[in-house]
Image (cartoon, rainbow, N blue to C red):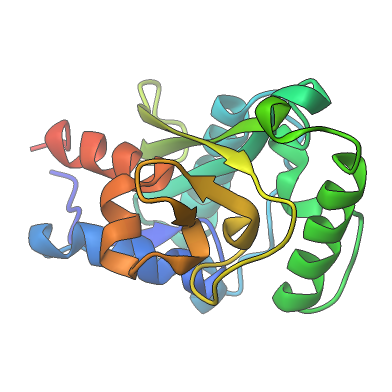
Length: 203
């Protein structure tokens, strides 16, 4: 029988690991980042969040020997025809620290939306999570989440990461980066997808 007490997370993002571990904690699941196994990032050559999540999960499982969990998430902006989409993490093509990459991505997003009025700045975070029991699992568990909002004209808040300072949450009238982490986890695209995962988790 496959044990799910320890699962490799196909990411080295410490903030993402923290968010996901907090949500999965009630199931006594330990998430281990792929960096603990010196696993390099997978080549994300899929054309959708679903494809890339599966690619990353299979890659991490193969190199760790453990069940693997991967998420592929991104920001979809209507006025930009769905950009940055699956390229959200590397939108500006910036290398460097996570903070430097985030800053470059946010700056490019604001630049590309500079002439777009508030009413046309609708956007949503999308998340697809894939869980594989082993590398060639023919039936990955796929869960998705979507979080509706709009893009602000300037950054606000210190919490979260990525595009959180620019993502306005209408239900709470603030940026995602201004939310308490527990509140964000309850609302977010990743939180929704993980809660679906918890509901359908393999016995």
